[in-house]
Length: 201
Image 1 (cartoon, rainbow, N blue to C red):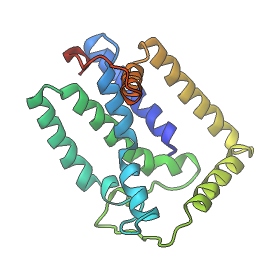
Image 2 (cartoon, helix red, strand yellow):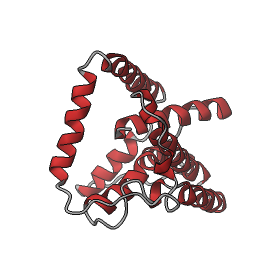
Image 3 (tube, rainbow, N blue to C red):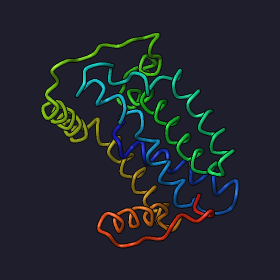
Image 4 (cartoon, one colour):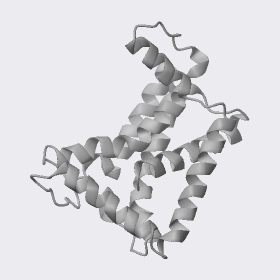
């Protein structure tokens, strides 16, 4: 899945779950954690192969043998430290990333790719001397070629509906997470920002 697809699926699931459980919209920092968690496996594994050539691009962080213990530890720590909503948000984003990669190929007419989440039982190949620009260009070229084809039209419509619907939901929720980004920007340029309140956690 593409990064925006991972983020959209994670936010949709988290927002609806929070609303069902509490009747309220998600809060600031948990939403930031959802977004980060939804990208976390790729932030670890893609550089591990494409830059350092030490692990496959669906390696340790994509593995269920890493994801499940790690999220359980984070939930326990979050509970003890009073950051349970934040650790839950990260866990939701992280854990939903994995089935997204497993079943993404089904949308394109392929079989589920269970191997992507079974490292080290399924080690995977490691590419060396990767031309990162050429690799990303090839990915985008394939993506553009597919969505411009007749077979890609239903996929494109579904993606627009998913991402557009999630953006609307985020706006209805009050744009949670945007305030965090603003405060980080203010601190970077030397303008003081508001500290984290307990209700944001």
